[in-house]
Image (cartoon, rainbow, N blue to C red; front, side, top):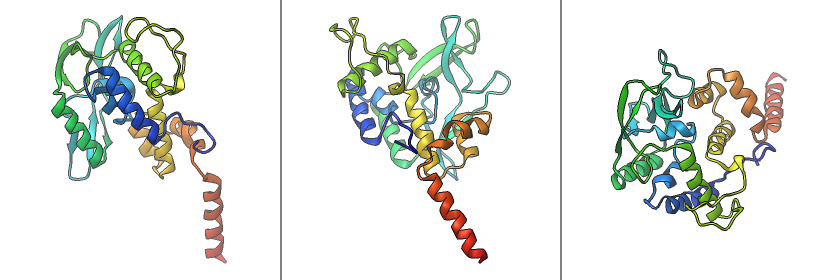
Length: 243
């Protein structure tokens, strides 16, 4: 619970999920790393993460978000990240800590990026080739149905959701509907933890790709743990200074 509001994932849960998702993919840490990385980003933006990965500047270690994988008339396409357009792609950088950057580099060593070619923005758009860090077992771009199936199998493996039939995984197994446990919940977790650690709403809005910081404020301000007590102490401190 954060500020009285339930958040789907906690730290230990994410560790369990990482291992289970890796097993579900059957190709090492592909999905397992994803479950811990880039929580500020939308799911489709994670899928579009290229081999450039972590980039170090003089000020910080960060990941550049410059594309996502989405659909146009039933066809997978590369597109600008959340909030971006053809004329204003709205590239942005999300900071990483050193430990996570090291894990991602190790992932790319064990599972080299795969060249994937998709049209840009539209079904008949210009073809663009990108070396993606995360792909299907068939070395193709991830899509929602494929990933969700693997994700739900991992959730079942750690006891978070239940199957609704007895069919094997990969052969028609289905699970209960739990939208609050899907990958997008990691994005909400990131925002909630950032708010609780004192990240200002303008910075958080930029990291999440929200055009309007007011939306970020409305969505997450109620999740600040101990906000009332912090306000009480701040007012008391100012009163004592003025006395």
